[in-house]
Image 1 (cartoon, rainbow, N blue to C red):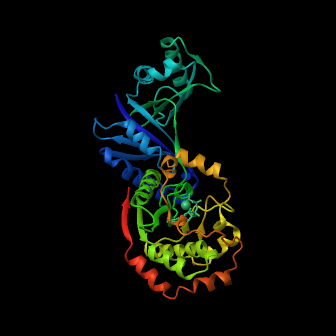
Image 2 (cartoon, protein in one colour):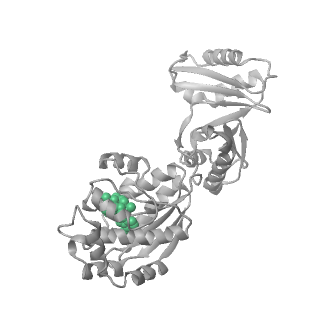
Image 3 (cartoon, protein in one colour):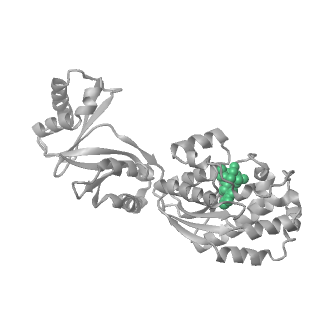
Length: 390
Ligand code: ATP
Ligand code: MG
């Protein structure tokens, strides 16, 4: 039995004239994701993209799993290719969907006929195929409103396709169709979720992580790279920069008033990330911040962080409760990695009484104590390590 995968576009259908370039981008993203499994041919027709494995030994379960994480896909399904002949279609529906049909109590048949020369019209196909299925599976009844299994028959140009229930796609828009942004990634729960949420809206990711050895361990850094690998299953390739942050944190500790440690640290993270992001053709930064979560995430503190850069800063978790963020991190399988207990540089030299309502003038004055800030920043950027995550 020859099998293929059928892809239904999501929001793409709404994009009018851009639709073609969106679809091409989606196909490119799908190719990039599943080419590790073998060679596939892609073709478009109407609002469906067909993914056809060239070699017989390709594991379609793996392909479907990978494709179910590609943004821009509303639904996908495996389909069996068969001859355009009623007998063949009936036989294929029963054999190919045997397991699903045996377990189900109710079903219905839907038919689409893009080849208008096919002798039966869609309602007739439904009736003939439905009748045949009923004669073979005595456990089944027809339910047109809420069936356990929808058997879909599509009669196309060369062949007919038979498929069972759809699998839900990842939704969103194809990565890369909304430009590029730099995610400040920590080892926590929030920033991988923020990365996922922006990638879902079509944003290609580049990542910046600050490491402060020996205060933070190599394991902490490996954890962050593992988190990014998990996000990359959705977002595709993430060019990542690991920036040495120890000297800057020590300078803050030695020279600035303690109550401003965190806010200054966050501002410097933003400045460095902006520089890297610009070099990487990014037009925005992303963080995992949420209003009020910690002292550095009050509205006043966020205002002080924001004005360290001249780029939009997107914070998709901004209005979410921790529980809501955790639900997404479980869904995208980053939670278990995030809760591994390694120190982040944010927890090094934390002030006992951080300012929750910092005034920007006071922050700037405190920050100016680091006289060689530009030099330290330059140094950090030039010694950053680049890692390509896929
Ligand atoms: P998260 O779960 O994302 O770590 P958090 O609640 O721990 O969030 P903070 O540690 O205050 O929050 O960090 C806020 C945001 O700052 C993070 O979401 C992330 O975008 C960024 N950030 C924090 N630490 C780092 C780091 N070491 N490298 C890069 N970005 C960081
Ligand atoms: Mg954190």
